[in-house]
Image (cartoon, rainbow, N blue to C red; front, side):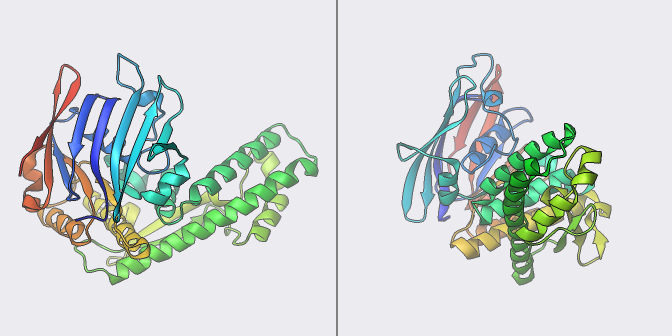
Length: 369
């Protein structure tokens, strides 16, 4: 059984779920039902047990059940090794999301110390062929799983960069206005870059050591122009030197926000963007599994996995291999699909939940073993 797992999840006025309760024992959770029944909403609720805005990057207001708009609440009993923690997450009528851990108000960073949640959702299937922003976000989610402080570094960098961009758009030329902001950008930017580089190294090691049915992805960081300054001092100097060019562009052209993630299907030597749809999905699954293995090695327990419409673009052999790997390294994986037959290869190694929709309300039925 998983050392890190949600043992109980309750939903109140969250998305399509007016009420709902799921009891778990640490095994993978297979959730099936027709499209639009509310399966992904359950995964989104679980994703909120990690720092950030969740797998849809939605605001607290968007998560409210309509038309009541009463606010929403999620509670969970989180197992972390031998300890159980009561987690409460809620929003009152669209107000900012709030968090309590064991009855005490807590910050997102506190949650990061207790829980690690990774996910793969259908919108990520186009990761390799869309813009660099999505690939940076994908990499930063992985970096956050290893380095909880990565979230604070990212927020600090983005805040300082917004202020600097405002000066650039206003054509402010006084160097004193830029100096303090560039120091902040250099401090947090160098940390972001270091976390990303370390994350790629962890993933490479995990892929090299694993016996898996999924292809290995070779990853590297690339810059839209030139090279990414490595150290805090180098980044601060690069920002200062780039001011005149940035003034002409009206935005900052140097820093980790200009980084892209380049992937190659290693066995074929083909860039990920040129691979088939099935190969691209297999590469993504491979990276999520590598992330999970590396985390398991570093923190002593496998993360919680969220795999939405997991069977899409995977043949039966790879799907069975995925289930075997998840069970093999002891992860609690929450998976969705349109029918129970998609999870036949799991057998009694998983728990099953059927989700149906009745007059706009999602209803849950936990299937007995």
